[in-house]
Image (cartoon, rainbow, N blue to C red; front, side, top):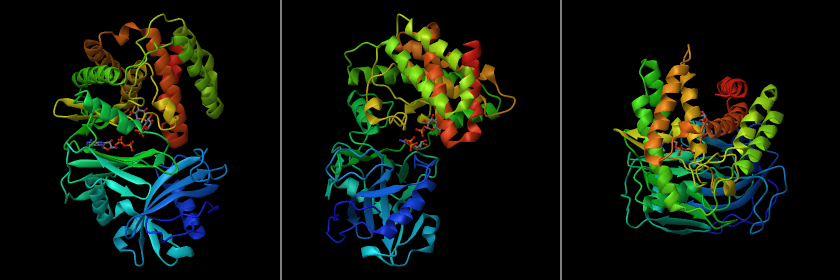
Length: 453
Ligand SMILES: Nc1ncnc2c1ncn2[C@@H]1O[C@H](COP(=O)(O)OP(=O)(O)O)[C@@H](O)[C@H]1O
Ligand SMILES: O=P(O)(O)O[C@H]1O[C@H](CO)[C@@H](O[C@H]2O[C@H](CO)[C@@H](O)[C@H](O)[C@H]2O)[C@H](O)[C@H]1O
């Protein structure tokens, strides 16, 4: 590991970052689903903070990237920062299997084995205790809503899902999301659900406790919220409907209503002065398209047709006012319990800077995200079902119109531009993370560029 300033744990036992531990982490990080830089090796790894959370468990913030490692207390680093919880044992239990990172060769941990501590039920239990009893541990702060106490003794399990972060479920009553990629500032996945709860919006599980750091900058590290037991996400439900040959229009209509409610609550919780500005938005979309076509050459033949969608947006004389939005809305971000839809994961598009994700945008961006998601679902089976997706999209917009007071279907130019922008994002996302899925957004790119519908 490159040297940072000497580090101390809360108990002052560890004085320096260790080169062998750094090497183990450099090999381990790119294999993690939540690690954003999979397409390039970890050239540099620096330690930003290390805190002993309890005996046998270290909390680390590490910096990965190409640039130089920032000095603690200095400006936010240019690369990426990740949160790790490492278990440290003399003799690791064989049950830890795939969680083991390796044996440290030098420094104060020499001879001990480190592993991803979230796989260790005992660590998970002790972590919950920290959330139940607000307080400090070095730069870490544990805070809780006193009105919503969390009982002790809940059995933990690690959520086994394709995630951008890591989540622990406690007794099917609470879910703790630990953010993996950390950026300075309040994470919208704490800020937004908390503000919506204060508005009395019941569509979003309200945070009950959270964890943040004050060093090397202020940042949110994790959020504990009620677990919606027995709920299914919209992606699973829509695929089940498709497999059974069923329609999904009733659910899509109710989902549109739910999103209308959430947008109204967001607009009240975060009042925004400036109106939306279609010209500036169209210019930003065009820039994103240019950058994406540079990274994914398959986009290039469609660039003129896609640019036309953005040019048309710049001449639209109406759009709903800009406001705080979800920012990365798709069927995997909505959960249905009984007949109620809930919305989760307000982090926004993970690759965008936090300041951008926390600023106001057109609510059409969310609507376009969900419309694209119906298209994704319909393309999971052969022969693909464009009419199924079209009916879901219609129903979703009708439900949204019933609550929001304006009908997205009557704003074709707006929808086309925002859908195009979302499909361009998806092309980049799939090229980076799941190249086998690239044909899904590419089919939409072709439709939007050539037919424009
Ligand atoms: N409050 C909740 N109740 C039930 N399940 C949840 C809840 N929050 C998240 N989940 C489950 O955890 C998964 C991942 O959550 P999410 O917030 O989307 O994490 P990530 O940002 O890491 O993708 C969701 O797809 C959902 O299945
Ligand atoms: O849920 P995340 O915040 O990690 O969002 C990212 O990953 C999503 C995939 O898991 C990705 O969504 C795309 O694929 C979905 C099907 O898997 C589909 O329903 C969405 O419409 C599509 O955008 C999302 O774009 C990305 O930010």
